[in-house]
Length: 303
Image (cartoon, rainbow, N blue to C red; front, side, top):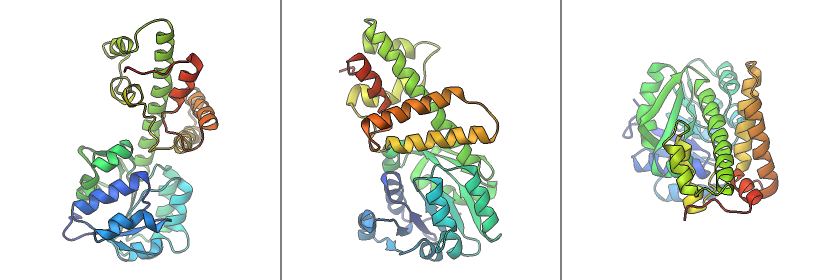
C-alpha cells in the first residue's frame, strides 16, 4: 500500500479542487512533487516542503503515484499522453490516478498508449471545493481490486473513508461521476422550479422545504445542498458554471455514445447554458437558481 512514510505523490492541477486535495495529502505526511500552469498556485505547498517539477514527465519520474485534477478530458489527455507527459516518465509499476471529471474514452486511450507495467486508474470525486479543503470527498474508483487496495491510504488522505468506493474496472469511475453530476444538476433545476412556484403561490419558503423533506419527494439536495443559497446566498463560485456546463455536455455525450436518449438532461443542460450566458462563465454552479429568482422577482431565502 502507498503509505505516507514510503510514498512520493505527484500532483498536477492545483485549482479550487486540486489545491485542497494536495494540501491534505501533505498534511497526512506524503512527500509531494507538484506542477500547475501557474507556479504561484503551488507556493503554499512548496513552503511546506513540496518539490516543483517543470513538466508532467518530470513529476512522473520522481513519483510513485501521480494524481491529476484537471478541467477537461482534453487537458487530461494532453498532460498524460502528450509530449513530455505523464506516461513518458512513469516508472515501471508506477500509478497514474486521474481524479478529474472525464470520460471512459480517456481511460481506454491511455491504456492503449501506456506500457503494460504501469497502472492507470480513474477516481473522480464529489464534494465540491469545501469537501476538497476538508478532506471529506467522495471518491469513485475504476480499477482492479488490488489497485484499489494499494491506493486506499492515498484516497483516505483526501476523502471520507466511508465514501471511497470501487465502482468497477477502468472507466467506471468516470461514468459514475458523470451520472452523479447529471442527476444533481437535474435536482437543482427541479427543486428550484418547485420552490419558485410555491413561494409565488403564497407558501412560506421554509414551510414548503420542510414539507418536501417530509414527503416522498425528499432528496439530499432539498434537505442539504440547497441551503447554500437559501441560508448563505452562496451559489458555489468555487465551481464555475462553465465547468458545470462542460460536465453536463460530457454526460449527454456519454448517453449518446451508448444509445440512451436523455431528453430531460438535455433540457437541464440548456437551462445551465442560459444561466452561463446571462451571468458569465465564472458564476457558481448553483447560479441557475438565480434565473428563477430573477423571473419571480424574489430571492429564495429562509432568513
